[in-house]
Image 1 (cartoon, rainbow, N blue to C red):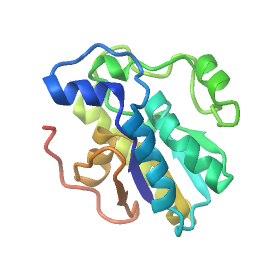
Image 2 (image 1 turned 90 degrees about the vertical axis):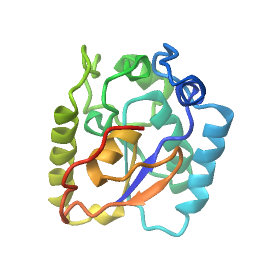
Image 3 (image 1 turned 135 degrees about the vertical axis):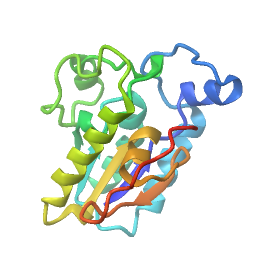
Image 4 (image 1 turned 30 degrees about the vertical axis):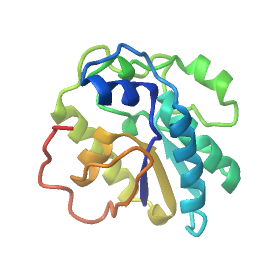
Amino acid sequence: MILLRHGQSEFNLLFTQTRRDPGIVDPKLTPLGHEQAQAAVFALAGERIRRIIASPYTRALETAAPIARALELPVIVNPLVGERYAFACDIGSPRTELERAWPHHDFSGIDEVWWPAIEEPVETLAGRAARFRAEMAALPDWSDTLVVSHWGFILAMTGEKVTNGQLLRCDPTGPAPDGFSWHH
């Protein structure tokens, strides 16, 4: 499968400059983030993608939208691939708001309030990644899947640190990373 980190968000832009949480809840993409999402459309043009799974966070949904349009595929929203809850940006938007904004996405797998109430331990994120890896490995066509996710989740899945808009291949049937360093 292919993992794609969402495009640059308003949070990413400010956090990179200050290294402090700017307090933005469920941030949107910046203009650069939208360009990165569009670049992913072109980067994925030659791939055989038949399934798009995205995190419920707005930045991931905005990244997935142009890809879904180009490939004429629905987006399956799955909270398992969401970011580790640690900053204000990891407070999500309620399911009903998301459904209004993206009526063609499949939100059947999420609750109205789907993000954690308190900071998520790294071990919990690792457990989510292991569960998602197992679910994907059980599918005969896992290789035809694009997953639009986040820095922390992709790190937990692969042991690799990725930049905004970066694509990374992941074989869920292969070995999981032995561990990972949690520093940006």
